Length: 127
Image 1 (cartoon, rainbow, N blue to C red):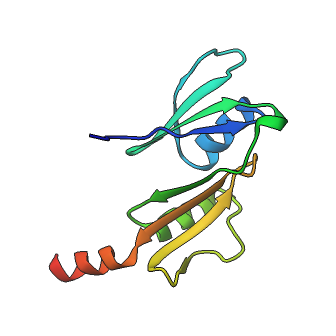
Image 2 (cartoon, rainbow, N blue to C red):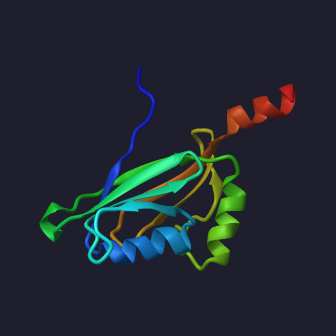
């Protein structure tokens, strides 16, 4: 039944968010509600779509998103080359069986990019 989800992330500054997600994280701006002062926008990268909406300070909360990606090492390198500040632990294999790294956007939304190591190992042995 379920096919997709489009999480809505809060931001205090939509124009600044557009710059960060498009120029630094490599997402494409898919749409915006108003070209002069956007309040609601959508981004796409490959099969992922995120929506973002202006929120006042008192409306902001901690958001944590996890993105399943094909190659977290390549993405980590891409972000390093773009000057994106990633978490202090860098990219690593976790005790729960993923290879991942994380970062915060300018509104302190947490974004983690990962690959399941068991699936990766299975793909290597069957491929």
